[in-house]
Image 1: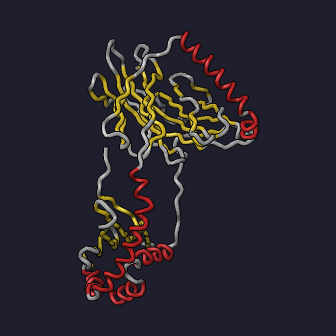
Image 2: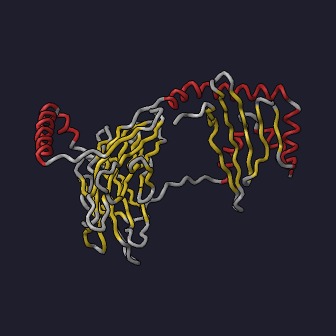
Image 3: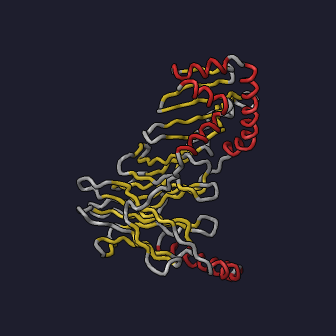
Length: 375
């Protein structure tokens, strides 16, 4: 997985305006760098109601109109090529400056730390469940694939999106349900920009009870030593609490004998202890529930994910109940309560922003005059 050598720098984010009748438009300026910042091309487009009205290209140094409405603008601007070139050079200079700041970040890569483990053993008609987790990678794009004896598995695979840790790094988790066969090999294949070839991780054997006890004893001793060494710092830190951000969503719909799957994710909380419980008609659900441990983000905060498999019934609610020190009462979250914040702007504000964006190459005064002439 490699980056395209043609890099687009968005100099101006799309600036929208709309009217009470549902019309809208936006202006967009793009800088295209071919291989290096020494050869930068500026492209500016003006769009209205999903139709591109006009486009400026610095290589050709002219404005091309795509509608009769915009032809007057294009003809007027194309009569002043020196003025167009001068204005374009100013914007290209901004592009080069931004490129020197941000392009090195695009080339940085950090290899993910990958763990493959068993979440649930197969029992009767209930399939086994594996999880492949990739932590602390950069940049964001990544692909996780399950392989069974070198053949890709696509059925009964559910994955989270790339989850931001808040420190430029990401993590992702992929679940596989399957009925194991003796002697087979199950692998998680990770494709990421940090490696020029796929990274293959096989499912490791489970620890024996004796080895597990030894590991727990050693870990307990290590943790005790760390606690004694930094006791004062931990004491001060544990006085503060941070409420978790909770999201509950559906990963899979029920079909025939396959149950539906929900995930309840609590992110960015402190301190570490937390309890996630699934309820059904005010009764706790314990069967077919699998949860991760409290996962450290590396910045004193934690996150946890709980999965529920169930067969839904009409009219019922399946809330996720969260108990944490940041709240003196339980927090109840139902599926579908999460809403993305929206930004409301007046029509006048959006129109002003559109004109401001377009004026990076064409002055507001001339655009306004041509608009008045066309009425």
